[in-house]
Length: 411
Ligand SMILES: Cc1ncc(COP(=O)(O)O)c(C=O)c1O
Image 1 (spheres, rainbow, N blue to C red):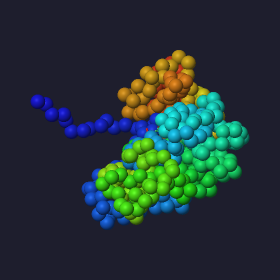
Image 2: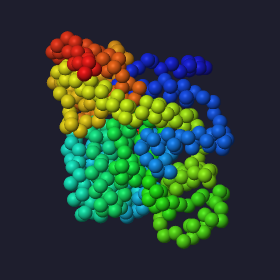
Image 3: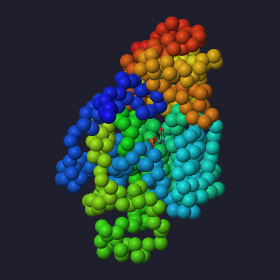
Image 4: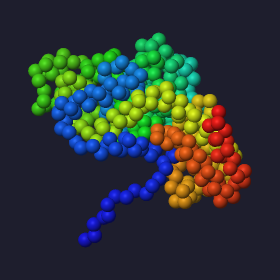
């Protein structure tokens, strides 16, 4: 019997829409030894992590913690815990991840309404308000940065619409948090979720979440503590309840809040290594300063934008609303998009992405986020992309991509 060799991933520069190359400091934190789940050091570290993510989400929300799982687990936990069967939810859709919110809300057996705009645009707040007035939803669920189109939905006005009409607001900030302005409290966001693998510079597998007091009260009103760990008070609370039990056990935020809160009620076994990673992602952002991190993403995103334009490529979508951290470029006529991505990977060790649905094979998505929002990563990617374009027969002015990016850096 042959034994597989030790793991040896090839060196790669992940310049797609995420995951990106993880920050080595995060990987180092993740190599630390395990500590028992209820060890005082561990519970203190969990509490400390909650505090760090309050700063990342810019919120005072007590209920700010990690859902164990990828970003999608955070989204699903939020929606399944907020939505009861038959509840009305409004989803502004401007890309693939809006459709994901629809899909998950439908599985929660909610009554789902949408307002949709073409890919490459964002949804005007007036359209959302008009739909809120018509539908009277319990919840508006929206993506901030839809990675499929690279668009960044303005949220402040949607927050005002939700406040005016007494509607809860949920935001999926997976792709945008840390690299674009995000203000949970100032924008009136009730629940927001994210992931580590984009601007936070970590691997996927942990979903930070923040929940307003109002949303937390609503979720707690649906609580059912599982048999075996119930106490008398839990029976009393459930006896008078009129709300529907949350349909998921693992993603039941009522129980997860009790697990992260002072009660430390047993739920799942903490994904300790992911907790270490998530804590380091937040710590690094807080150490850098959120504004500085957003500015770093803006700068390197602008350099990449100028660089791809310097290579003669057209940019997809409404650039005024592009996320800082990713750009979608039209694949030029005569170039085989998948072959070019293959050449980037095999010849240069650089990964760039394509997109989904109507944009599959039509655009490449190039990210500048997390640890890879760096000058050398931007310039190397542009230099290599130039070679691949020329090899494919595109006419490119030699050095034009790198030169355009350097002009941005020169200010
Ligand atoms: C905006 C957005 N939402 C949700 C997801 C799903 O995240 P995950 O794959 O970590 O579950 C992604 C992944 O790219 C995303 O970009």
